[in-house]
Amino acid sequence: MARRGGNEFAVLLQGCDAQAALEFTQRIARAFEVPLAFDDQTIDLSAGMGVACWPADADNADLLLSRSEIAMYTAKRKLSGALLYDAAFDSASGQMLSLLTEMRRAVEHNELRLFLQPKVSLPGGEVLAAEALVRWQHPQRGLVPPMEFIPFAEQTGFVRQLTLWMFEAATRLIAGLPEPLAGLRISINLSTRDLLDPELSTRLGTLLQRHGVRPERFCLEITESAIMDDPQRAETMLNRLSEQGFKLSIDDFGTGYSSLAYLKRLPVDELKIDKSFVMGMEKDEDDAKIVRSTIDLAHNLGLSVVAEGVESAAIMERLGQLQCDEAQGYHISRPLPAEAFLTWCTQQTAATATAA
Ligand code: C2E
Ligand code: MG
Ligand code: MG
Image (cartoon, rainbow, N blue to C red):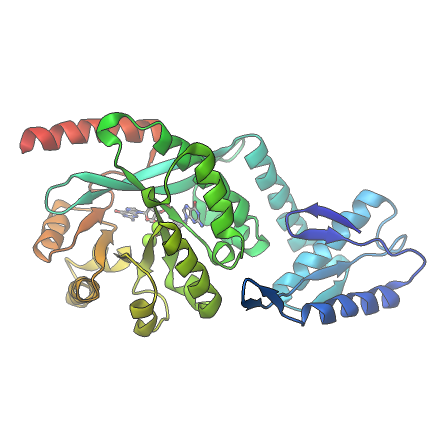
C-alpha cells in the first residue's frame, strides 16, 4: 500500500487476477460504508477505485499505475465505485490525466497568478476590498481564464491545492500591504470540495498563523450550489469558519437552487448578486426587480450586499440609489495582476481623498 499524494492511494495485489482484484475493491467499498466519527460528527466517506492488471493492461510499472489512475477517474466520474481498466477509457481520460499533470506542474513551476478585482463602497467609491481570481500563465497557451480549468480542478479534487495556493498568495499580499491600504479585505472563492474537506479550517488557520494574518481579513465566497451539495456538512464547516473569524459571502446569488431558510440559519455576512441580473438591470425590468428585491432581502436579514458585473456608470448610480452597499465590475476595474492592483488602489485612494 502506498500514498500517491493527497487523497490518492495505490494497492499492489500480487498473484491475483482481475476478478480477485475487483472483489478486493468491494471489500474496501464496504469498509467505506461505515461513517467516520470525527469531533462529535459522523462523516460519510466514499472512494473511486480503478484496477489495472499486469501484463494484460500494461507491461511496465509506470503504465500500470497510469492506467489504474485512468480507471479510477472514470469510476469517480461515473460514480461507479470501482472499475476495471478498459482501453475505451483512454482517450478522454488520457486528456484528463495530462491536464492534471500540467496543473500539478503549474503549481510547482509557479505558473498560477493571483489577480485582484476591487470592490468599492457605494456611493463613495472607496476601495474596501478585492476579490482574488486565479489565472494560469501557461507556457504555450498564454493566460488561461479560470473557467477553462476550475471545473476540471473541482472534478479531480485538485482545487483544494489551488485554494491553498490562492490563500498563500493573498496572505503574503495582505502581510505586505502599505499603510494606506492596511485595512483591505480579500475575498477568496471556495468550491464544494473545499467546503467538504473536514480539515479546511485547520489548514487555513495554520497558514494564516504562519504569516501573522488574522482570518477577519478574508471573506470566503461560496455559491448556493456548493452549499446545497451537502447542506449539513457545509453548515458545520461554515459555522466553524465563521467562529474562526472569516467573513462569509454567498456568491452568484439568485442563480442556484436553494432555500431561503438556510440563509437565516447560516452565519453569512454578505450576498453577492449575480452579474447576469446586474448587467441586465438597465434593459430588463425583471432583472432590475430581482436586484432591488435582493438588496431589500439582504438588508432585512442584516447582511451587506454587493453587486458584481457593474459595467457602466449608469448601473453604478442606480445601485447606489437602491442602497446597494458595494460594487464590483469592469466599470470600476477589470481583475488586475497583484502589482497593478496595488498601483490602481493607491491612485484611487488619492482620487477619492481629493474628491472628499
Ligand atoms: P466569480 O467568483 O463569480 O467571479 C466573478 C467573475 O466575474 C470573474 O470572472 C470576473 O472577472 C467577472 N467579472 C467581474 N466584473 C465583471 C463585469 O463587469 N462584466 C463581466 N462580464 N464579468 C465581470 P473570472 O475571473 O473569469 O472567474 C470566473 C469564475 O471562476 C469565478 O466567478 C469563480 O467561480 C471561479 N474562480 C476564479 N478564481 C477562482 C479561485 O481561485 N478558486 C475557485 N474555486 N474558483 C475561482
Ligand atoms: Mg466570486
Ligand atoms: Mg460571482
